[in-house]
Image 1 (tube, rainbow, N blue to C red):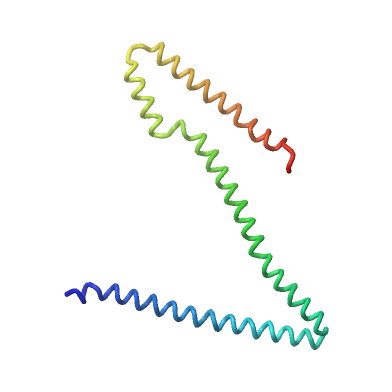
Image 2: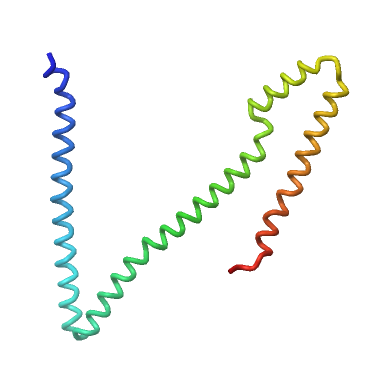
Length: 150
């Protein structure tokens, strides 16, 4: 009975081990093929341009190959920072319509009941606070842009 329960797990483990072995063999074969390809390129460049030029050309190719992922990573970081800034701005603008805020507001109105003057003052102060936060939100970005870069 226990063997029947462990059979799917055993099959998954065997498949995982087989995958690791196959991927390792493919990786080793690919690396070897790349090494022989670079050696063939070097031999061909050596015949046409000489040893020093061949070394410099192969080195330049590897520098370009090394720089490409760095550029891709920098672009991905900028895109992620931009996305985070936009998400934060969206969260700031939608915090007033969140269910928690609306529930709190409804409970406050129920507590105040017939005293509408206090409720009007509370709503007015919330509205004034929101307007002030919107006015100061744009100046923060301008101050950061006005500061000199170090």
